[in-house]
Image (cartoon, rainbow, N blue to C red; front, side, top):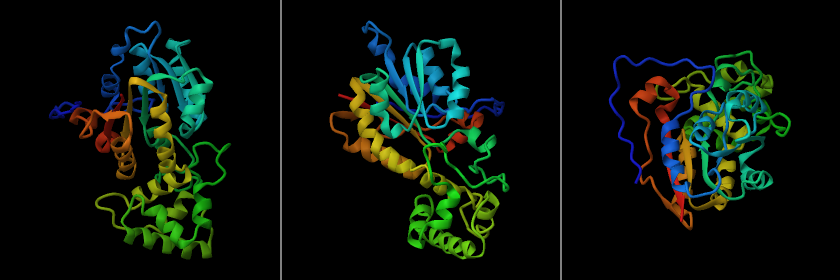
Length: 309
């Protein structure tokens, strides 16, 4: 069984700066895959990184000797990772696509049987810090878009706010908030859009005053819920996991990092019900205090591992 007792933090720890997104659990992911078990193969073990982002886990897998296929829906992430991984040219393929279709993408690229698959859910920190698509409520003048790929996704965040019925809006916000807050935000959305349609981050922030979210900024969970709805994140998870399991060879491992309860519930339920597989993490791995200090995004992360029998 995999376990992760977090060490106590050192007083000297400081946050690191990095032009790339700080990937969570990088060492733990590679340890969980245990690629050395496939040393008998006459080829490199094949790994799929289903959520490339800026390539932190991809770089670690390549350094561990993997032949890598990495997928991301955002072309800007692929461009950034291409530069970061150039030292391993010929050892990886980067593909723009939705991991919902992981089996189709894998087969098209010669990865129909793999030894490991990585999912690091959510979006990159760079989307919050350096992006103008409205992922962060720190930029009130940004367009309220939130699409990871404008080419394949027609509906933006503002479109949902301007078109959904009250019950549909409640369903969107209840994914990350209690029903009382979800219902209140839905009511405010309907009232506001009669006066002026939603266009910018500031328009949405303007209706969230007084929403209580347990020490969080009132926009934190509301923006998360809206982003998840725009990108069909939960639906994609439910669709991809059975397909991912089907790609694994016996002994191959599926490693998943989640960041909030709605994601983790889907991961946990799939792991519990998966046929022909065994759960290696009865309790999810938690980040160390050192990792949290270096990367605050890690504080809510959970890592789960499933092995195909």
